[in-house]
Length: 457
Image (cartoon, rainbow, N blue to C red; front, top):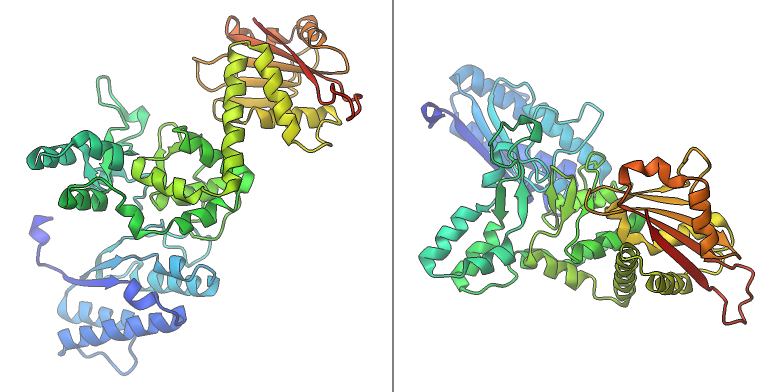
């Protein structure tokens, strides 16, 4: 590109200056066009423009007459979607404006847009399908330029006599793949090599010589909280897991690339990746909180009493899973009864209700297991199977009984030979029998009493 330096005129637009106030999108686009046309006519006074002009015709006339093309740089291209979230008609007109102005035009040498959100997905003619996109979920070759690399930060810390470990804890954490795993050759470095630091925070910390929250001051925690509080599909529980240094799987494919079209929690989580609140591992398709600075925003956003209940439930769920791994029957029984005390009175009045309640109690297992209700074992149906997604944790098979005992539940597992269908996990399989007596009246001490039997197989 060195030979192209100085060859093209450049049009640079900062969309917040045109589209960030309360006027209609259509009016602001008209104002933008008028301003750019005026500057172009001043810059090229010898061109004959004709009596009826718009931005496209003016640039076409200049290109044809002067044999010149333009590089068009649009900063904060997604302003309409952030500032006019509910204006669907305005968003459509904006996309149509950009498409008609930029797509397949001879006067465009290069169009380059920056913003937080990827290009809005659309099946109609307004779709901006002429761009190559590089995003927070797939920055491609631009990964090292999204922020400062670890090498750059470490070098600057040495120069200034600062503690690099502190900078790493506060501002590192974003991970970007430099290629798909199947493209690797023997001996090649990992496909998850790019560690990127938030540049705004690093610069401010080095200037002030103090590690603190800087990026968070550019955003409000209310922005994060309003999306978390939507609580799609147990979103709060996933956030609690993330804040405990956990990871959560996410499907990023359905996100419509705007601030309002949410169909499930994956859409919200994907948006939070693009906003910088979450990191994304493209190899494992998991997300995580990248660093201490961002974690502080989550802590501020989850200070209400409702979150205290959520964190306590998650902690108990983790304890329940760990006790199951240890085959600690007493602790499993106590934690199941504690979970039942928090459940409604109706959830245990059927086998399906009992299964649902136990799955809720084992919420922390959802990111470590594929949970299959009533898996077909060939000789009947077990009640629950927990199939591990990682090889270092045991599989779990659970059988329920009512008004009998936990030994009867375990005996049924063996009698029906349920473990035979999990032969792959032989030696790393835990069998759990749970009994609950639903006939006990609520004025007796045995009300909501469970018994539990656990074996290894």
